[in-house]
Length: 116
Image (spheres, rainbow, N blue to C red):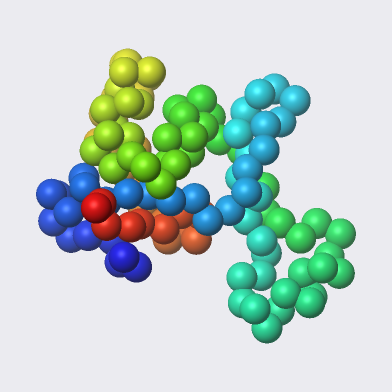
């Protein structure tokens, strides 16, 4: 699935899958590592850069969301688990996490697969 579903049922059933590496910084926060060039034609140039990746540091809720996007859980299950883990801090989950998932998808950090 390459496009973001336009209806709620398909969106909640879709499965987010990570496309980039991540690590933990000294403070224990999740840091996403996205290559500066994603075109295969420019991979040779990337190897020459002193810092070949963009680093995106996530807050606690964003780090949990990233961890939950394991290719097994649906978007709906990710939302439910975020609510269970973070309670009021994550609310409104559907709006906040949905917007963040959308940004991660558009930025090439995640892709969506159909459930099943």
